[in-house]
Amino acid sequence: MSRVCPVTGKGPVSGNNRSHSLRATRRKWNTNLQTRTVLVDGKETRVRMSTRAYRTLNKVEK
Image (cartoon, rainbow, N blue to C red; front, top):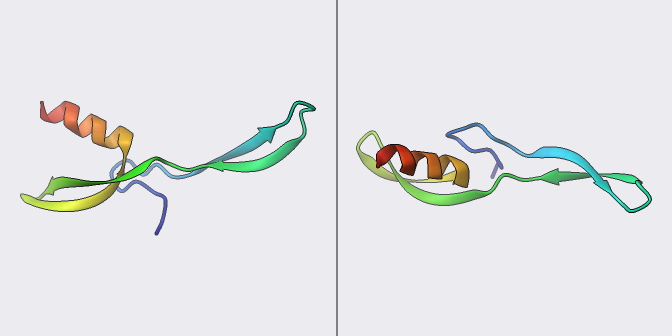
């Protein structure tokens, strides 16, 4: 299962861990995907979307 939000297209981002001595090792930040029930074409469907996208959809609905 991919770590990409179907609404926003956000995916994992990579960067470096930095120790106290500033040695760099690669690391990855995954998106915060949650399973939510959303209306799509008038039907309720379960979607794994990012929390940011869900918050934005709730804001638009109100």
